[in-house]
Length: 316
Image (tube, rainbow, N blue to C red; front, side, top):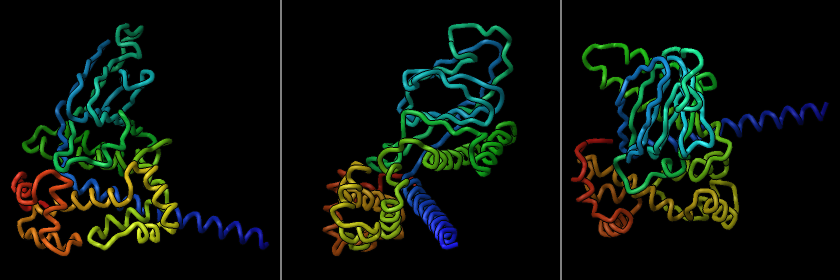
């Protein structure tokens, strides 16, 4: 009986730990994705029939394809072997690498039988604020979210995007882009939950100790953080935390904190209601001058120039 109770207790603790990990991970993803202004745009709604192939060149933007009907194959240098996609699947190339879409595994061969029609929504994505993005840096050359294996929310959003593409009324493009923005955010979350070997920040979010510390830092960037106080959040010793954080994220904790504060500063500076001095105070700097020096060291420009460089002055 005692053994059964112990197993039940362990199962309960594992469930709590899993819930905490999910909450911390989602909190960090939300703050990071929300801090960077992102452009997600549907650029093509295409249909193919018969035997076909389409070469997609390398671009400076990320690219994605959502299968809305039929099947297709994807090949290219980034893939070890051709990959088959079916209706509801999404493939994302964060760095916009060259690839080929085709009706068969070998784009050069005609299919033995006439394949069914294939339709897909294609688009571009890019982060357009900040000097670097820890999520984009941690994503692989490509990743796939399978419609059949994804969450109900992801499937519903993909279906909404598909239905909107068939609506020819005014405003369709605007609605599509907003839905695509949300779909990409959910796709990143799906990838983190299922990735076998995540890296960088995304790898840290699969560790309950690191994700706990990261969630606290992201929630309270203006706090007087030290390696010791971060380690306490993680429930680790100072040395063990610093070593694990640096090995996993690729940056020492204090350097990551500095980059996150600079990212938050850029977001806050876009809001004209906050003076530079107010932003400095929110981020834990005792003087505006100290904040200005810090910001220019990290971002390469002063807060004033960063504030005037964007067009969305009252962006949150």
